[in-house]
Length: 124
Image (cartoon, rainbow, N blue to C red; front, side):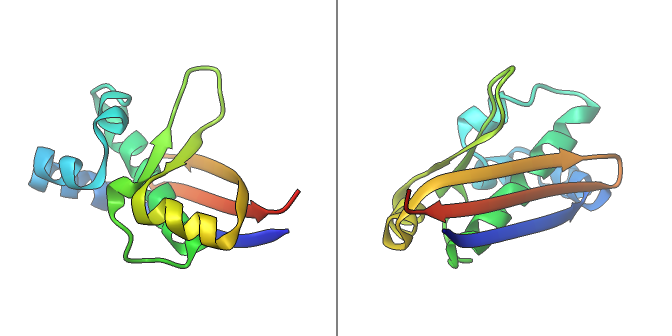
């Protein structure tokens, strides 16, 4: 049974401008060290981080907890594997309260937009 759905659309240009303006301070606030190290550099880094940010917002919405700490939701990316989601702290507690047994995550981006979608399932 689906117990939560969240989706977020991020303007890629705006997100890249925020990264340029606030730099590492913004990255440390929003992303875990693993998330930051997994994107590399160059032009694609802002798109990758934008998609991860969109997924974090989507996860907070799916959990029904918009005020969760940003780093309590971690986007996992491993080569040749679909993206994953690790919940910690209050995000993990919210998932347990909902009886979440499976998390489905989709990320995508292009030059204009980054999208993250999260679906939470409970039960067998």
